[in-house]
Length: 148
Image (cartoon, rainbow, N blue to C red):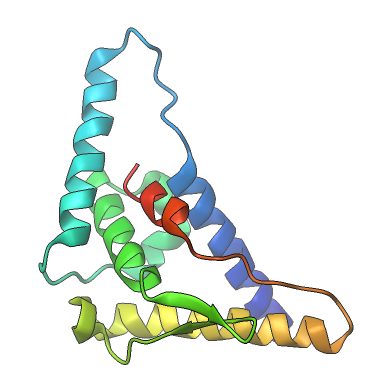
């Protein structure tokens, strides 16, 4: 249990760092900036589209080496799922019951749902030990960062 919780925390941190990382291009490097802009625009379009998405969830652990096309798909799948995650009674909950509702594969839906549940178990276990833990809200800033 502790290993699963630690693994999920590491995964969540990796995803947040990766998606919130700002472009490291120099101001005069227009071609690189334009490419990053194209990726962001493509990610936003894919997030909002009704195109069916299926990702290799193992890529989440190796995002820095994944091709841009796969990074975009991962961002879109994560965005579609977390757009439906809220905090209720101090744990993460979603109103989704299947990947079909947000046009992602069932395996992607179950992967993200299981990880969310593991995180909730870790939160509850920490509270049972007397630790004061409040889950971070999944707000518009986080969701917007996925398209950057």
